[in-house]
Structure formats: structure tokens, C-alpha cells
Length: 150
Figure 1 (spheres, rainbow, N blue to C red):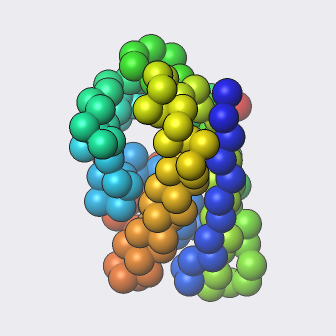
Figure 2: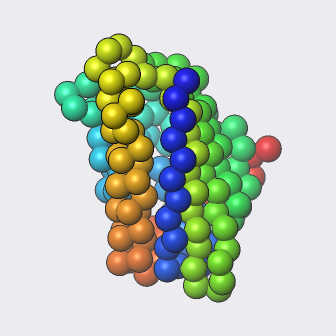
């Protein structure tokens, strides 16, 4: 398994950053390679991705969700093996640090080489930068799910 960790500070309150992150169906607006996400239940999402011509579909289960603190997931079926957690850290009333930690299993030579060259790390960093622009330019979240999964 490979790992990636990235973080970014966003100029919104912690509840705004967290609420937006729970809106999985908006991820294609700031995550490169994500074509579509369907929220099937409170804890199950279906992902369709295409990265460098590699098309994948998989289901991910939310394994832990604590409002304004963290969202953890793991894949449960499909073409990808990954697990991760995103945590939200209040810096002050108007600023939040968003930290993403993810483990993934590269498939095949191309993905293994891309991982060794830092492709996933750069993509993750870019996704967080686009999340920052997305949420800051809006000034508010598109919605939010405040339920807990423990």
C-alpha cells in the first residue's frame, strides 16, 4: 500500500469546510479525474473516475464521520483499493486546516511508476487547492450532512 498526506488552510469556518466535504456529489467540481459520485446511502458512495485514460468504478463506505472533525472511508467493491481520512482543524473562527491522509494500492506498472514519481501526491495537493478555491469563492457550503457514523 502507498500513502499520501496533504493539507491546506482554507479561509472559511470549520463547519463550512466540513459541511462542503460531506457533499460528495460536488467532488467532480474540484477533484481531477472524478467524473461522478453517487450518494447511495448515508454511508455508501459510488465513484466513477478516469485518470490518464484509466476508467474505474468503485464503491466506498464511510466508516467514521464526526461533524466538524473527520470523515473516514474505505473501498468495499470495484476497481480500486483505498482507504483514508480527512480531518478538519479549527485555526480560528474563520480559518480551517483540512488534512487528507490516504492509503491506496497502485495497480500495474504504470500506476506503480506514477506513484513512485509522486503523481498521486501532486494530484491530491491540486485537489485540495481546488477545494480551497471552490469553497472560498462560494463563501458558503452547497449543503451539509451533520449525522455521525461511528
